[in-house]
Length: 66
Figure (tube, one colour):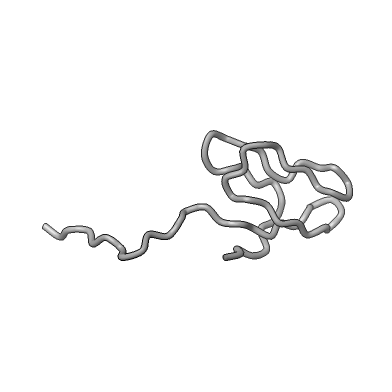
């Protein structure tokens, strides 16, 4: 049986994401485990909704930061 090795320095599973709004094209940074509703700063469309863990991202994820 193969044992799973532990990492020396554990990395967090949460990330910051650069998300593009599908309506206006605005790019905004959103936390992957957001606990509140995140809206676009330009048009007000919902970009992320909390779901008890990872947020549900409704826009297009362009890049994972950090």
